[in-house]
Image (cartoon, rainbow, N blue to C red; front, side, top):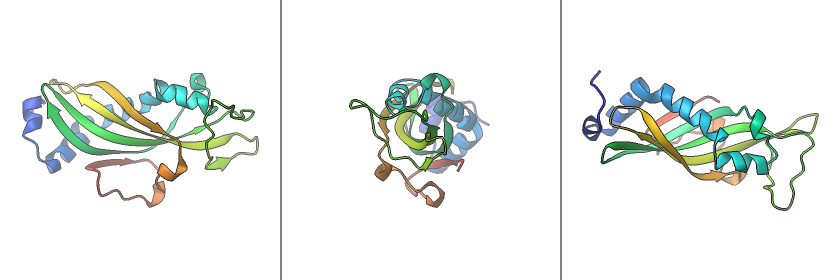
Length: 162
């Protein structure tokens, strides 16, 4: 495997990016994406949905990478992620909170909801993920895919956990 650098990244075709993501970055990406719900702005969105951020254990479902680009000494991967969380059983949305349509209501009245977010992962010249950012968080079920039927031909790399 060739050592990583942004110069090397600039030489990659789309097919080679897919291979590099799978061979070199998939575990680091998975760890980074799993940590994003514990940080802002997702953390505050979850609180507004009735999820206790302190006890949050999101169930990662899927993530897709849509493109790769290199600017200066940083490579960037644009992605979308979907995950499930469970609300507190006693929670009822207030006026300033987000009312979310659940995908499942448990016997104790807690709700399983699906959250999606778009973001950008940054890879530095040494090949380390850094400075990830969340661009958009969404809770509208109309913006969510039917995960088990999904086949997104626009993505260059997909991780399916569902």
